[in-house]
Image (tube, rainbow, N blue to C red):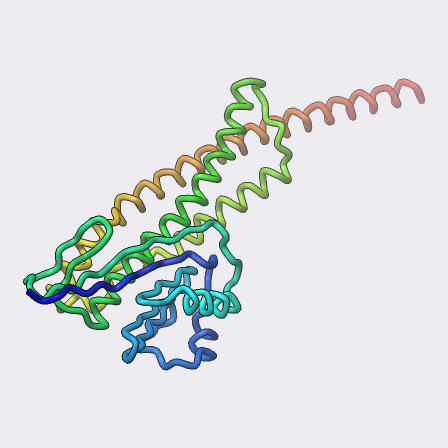
Length: 264
């Protein structure tokens, strides 16, 4: 029996976004493939691979800890805002020439052979999983904040949040929503699976293993709840604002009547 080999993969959410164009220009290694949204590098002699995505995720394959740290320090120079949430995912590729096709497990995948295309598919799905972890963390934060205001409504029948802070909260929600919409392509199947049934099956199995599509649907549903809460908060503040303006008008009319009485 052939001895099995392993390739260790680790995906890390390092930033909210990377300047891919500038990074590709200034990194000294020629990429194996690239697009406006990602860069894939192969280190042929060392059997190492590197995949960088513009939504802030870097995926390492067969990198030592010092080399990984060295590149993280380097790539942060191309980050918009660094993410310090300790979001990462580890996975393994087992190379077993005795199996006819890929076999997916929870923490590793067995494949009969490895090439750049196989590596790209596996590393892409792990990157998608980590990116969803990041968006889930952002959405959890938004839901926690909205729950606090809902509980205040239940206890006091009113909101203490100012209009300015509500607008900031709305801006935060819209920023998260727009970021997710901008990066919807992360769920798209890569072009290289279209004409290759083996890669297509590997991609589908990995998506199912990482629950990519169900997690995105859940994320979209939770963001919808946050948006409904925002509409409620806005309506409550608008009612308060209208009431305040009505009292101002009443007071002004009363003062106008008093002035008229005093001078006539």
